Length: 243
Image 1: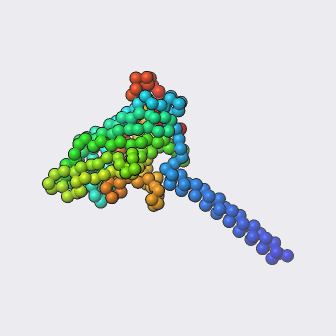
Image 2: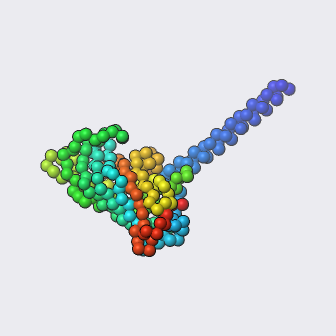
Image 3: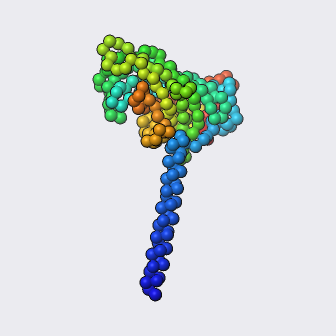
């Protein structure tokens, strides 16, 4: 009799463990799906109203300090100035054009370390890039997914000039990347471009979030502040963000 009770108890514990494992696997699968598809669908908000994000409503984002395009093992391109202007199409779609100037090439260094050695290349300026902007959310945080336009998924082409330049002269920047929104739903939210943010949405599958500099993986390390610029909304103190 004792053996029978023990067997039932062991069976019950094994069943509970199996159910727990199944539940954990389901949660893990859901999390993986969020990463693969770039996060859950979200909406732009203007003054807490998604319906206000429409044609004619424009915005601007200005880089805070220097911004860097990192190409590990290849080159880091630091630009001192960056400005983006854009227009909402609707509550789930916007188009933006960014311009970068005062750019220099450096030998890559580990994250957080200061660049010390120039690469003898001259960046043809201005660097102008275009992207579709799609609002996303993931685990309580809000993001912007930037996708390059067209079938080629081309953001821009960076030309490196100069006779001593050891790098490829014409470099297409393609793919997509995520930007985290800090101070969401304020008059000037902070946009965070970061290596860790891109890796969060960059699984090892081909369906992940990838930014490419030619054939090399690339990342952006920069911050920018955004604000409304059209006459109907600028200087009104309207918060903007994603929900």
